[in-house]
Every structure is written in C-alpha cells, then in structure tokens.
Length: 403
Image (cartoon, rainbow, N blue to C red; front, side, top):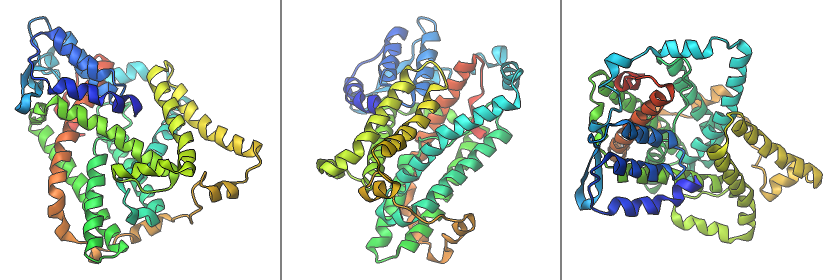
C-alpha cells in the first residue's frame, strides 16, 4: 500500500510530459518506473516490463501522446496473449502442473490450503469493509462479510472446475473494489436522502451489486469468446497507473477506519487521527501494514508472509496477557471490536426483500459499471500475462478470460 501510493506523484509527473518513447530501452524504463512503486500489482507490471524487454531492438512499443499530452501505450504491439508465438511454443498448462506437482502428497495440498486461507480470509474481510463502507451497512457487517466470503468461494470453485491451470486459486481480486464501493454509496445515499430505510438500502445493494458483477462476467465471456479483448489494451497507462495507486490509498483508508471503528469515506475524515486516542488505535495497524509491505517486497520464502500474518495477532494477545488486560477491557477501550451475535447461514437469505429493491437506481450505477468493465478487463489481461511469464509458457488470454 505505502510504496504504491508514495510513488504515484512521480509517475503522474512523468506521464503528463508530452514525449514519444522511440526505443525498446526507453519504453522499458517507463515500466521499470511504475514497477519500482512496489504495488500489490507488481506481477501485472512485471509482466508488461518483461514483454517489452523481450522485444527485439527496433520493434518498439507504440507510445504516442494522447489528449493533453499524456503518453498512451498501444498494447496491440505487445504480445500480451503471446499470439505471435502461440502455435510454436504453446504447452498445455496441465503438463506444467503435472511436472511441478508430481511429487506432492495430500499433506502438501493441505498445507497450501491452510496458507491460502490465512492470506485470503483477512483480505476478504477487508474487501467487505471497503465495499460496504457507508455507515448504513455497519449494523449488518457480520452478515455482509460472510456474503463476500461466500462469493469468493463461488469464484474459486469456478476456477477449480473450469481453469486450464491446475494450480489456480482464483481468489477475488481487488480491481473492482472501488467501483463496487462507489455503487453501494450511490445506492445508500439516494435511498436515505429520499427518506428510505436501512432495510431498503441493504436489499437494493445486495441485488444490484451481484447483478453488476454477473453482467460484468458475461461481458468478459463475450469478449473472450469472440477474441475482442484487444479493445481494452488501448487504455492510457497514466489512467491505469493512477487507478492502481488509488486502490492502495482506498485500502489504506479502509484499514485505518477499521482500526479506529469509524467510517472514513472522504479525505476530510483523516481528521480523526488528530484525536490522540484514535491515533493510538491506528498506530499498531499502520505499523503492521508497513511490516507486511516490507515482507511482501523483500521476503524470498513463500512461508514468511503467512507466518507473519499469524504472528501479528498472536503478539497482540500476548501483550494483552502480559499487561493484565482482559478481552472485555480491550473491547471497552477499542482495541478489539465490539462483540456481535453470530449470524447463522440461513439468516443471510433473509437480508434481501425484493419488494424493497429500488430498481430505478440501476441507471445511476451504469456509468460506474462501464468503468469497472474496462479496468477489470485490463487488469485481468495483465494477470494472465504475469502467470504466463512465471510459467514460461504461452497462455491464450481470451480463453483464460472466459474462465
């Protein structure tokens, strides 16, 4: 989060200068500059950088000045789907998986599953707090977080069944978080401003957001089936760079909001940190985020990050025990969230009352949905290219997108 947000200004200045990058080496430097930001999307950027570095001298990426002088990268010049080498070099992904996993036992798979649960579940709770960050959802956060985890289960099950990559995990990515959050806030504000109830807000949100993501999936399948994904490759790099950086800021804001138990939806909400008590509550979270960021950038072993994620809460409770602070005392001060009654699975189906849904709000979410289609499509193309480079094998972008 921190390095990506901190380098955004530098990249924005570079992107705003009208210039044409005429050689492969110069173009590669652009990608190296963005890659050095240390974002969560390093794999995507590294894929682009590697593709450019592999291009023979003289075959440069076409970067031309877009409106207002911002350079625009024509990715049709780059083999994101490796079409120019596909017939000669393509090796079935199943062969790769078989070669890599031939000696693995059920114990190995169990360890992998536990590690991925440790990494994924806290992230999914964070995603829920980002999507439903409006104060209207606070009383239903337990149930809404479970719904986000269930949606990830469906997403991962689809990957396991349909992906050509045997090792695919398929956890929900962060590319669409901002758009889903924007739509949920539009829905909540419009209903409450019209005198509606919280139940109307929850019902409408839980109907329109799944419709939006489902139609997004249908669009991606359509683009993949008809091999039309090249149309998303014309998005300007400054737009993508700024968007990826803003995801980091958005996650940072949501994390601080969780620490201090307050809703933070605007830039002015950072004023809460001027309160000494709120700053004290946020400090351990910010330090933990910094430690995890450094580990994710510097660690050479895959086991370090999940171990750190387990140790951080363990150390927290050890400190409470040593200091003689009970769990009830910690809740009263704000170190631990307030105790909430568990939500049975069957109660999740009672959150939606179709009679309370405001269908007219679909028109106010269409613009945000269109933006989500383009950005998620582009981010997914980069993800596929990154996996292809790590495997050393060619993948068909359009085919994988259908998955």
